[in-house]
Image (cartoon, rainbow, N blue to C red; front, side, top):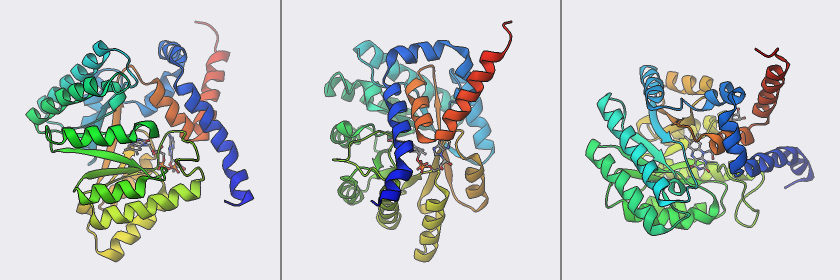
Length: 322
Ligand code: FDA
């Protein structure tokens, strides 16, 4: 990394660390979810707090030509009751998707299913969701959390494939280990979603410079597009997407062999442009009351989001009391 690169990335990294740190502060999360002033900003990234709200959002996206995957928000649960409640919310969501004739595709986090408590509880809880998914023919993607959970996530995912073969995992380009993981997953015929990585990881395990992460992403994406099973290219990075589209064209890889994935509310212009160009785009649609850590990660990803939030907070503060 050059000194110029380090200087360019430094403020962004500091901001990212700050917001990632805040994302773990449960007391702040409890406060933020009770205070209504953050709601308009949260509403940009979260489709609603209730099931009827997310179903309406999914319907609108379907009408627009988008694929969808639903995330019932929640993570880092610390009791067996909370795991069971999370599994129940997924069961309810899967039944509602089937009932409304919407696409049956969900994403979940293992710490929401008890990974921090024990692998056994987590396995049983996810198996319950997988069985509900099998009943309605749904695809289940296991999201990837920070690097301390990568091995356990891949292990549990491999075990749970026997319950529901319609399942996939996520690989983070930022992690140094990911090239080896991608090779193994290609050999297993796994359905991989490739993302850059949302967590603030140490340099010992992850590339910290933007250019290094982007280069790793492009290389892994090329391998997955050439040899993987319907990879999901999860990024909003227009330049990277442009390079991958040129690669697909040069290699004769048709758009039905892969898909792009983007987060609800992020780069809607790019989502629409890709659709217009005949690409498949799936939107990751989170809903639920436990939006705080997810929201903080979205702030950490883009400094402009923080400025926007601060401006709306200040505006709200100046308003005369009703
Ligand atoms: P990058 O951060 O370079 O952003 C490129 C451009 O996209 C920015 O310049 C900006 O215009 C826009 N952008 C990006 N983030 C934005 C935001 N929050 N608000 C507004 N604009 C934004 N991570 C993980 O660790 N585990 C996981 O399981 C997943 N799952 C996942 C699913 C899907 C469908 C997506 C799209 C992403 C994830 N991620 C994830 C998150 C991912 O790792 C990454 O943090 C974000 O996608 C941001 O990285 P980009 O690839 O968009 O590039």
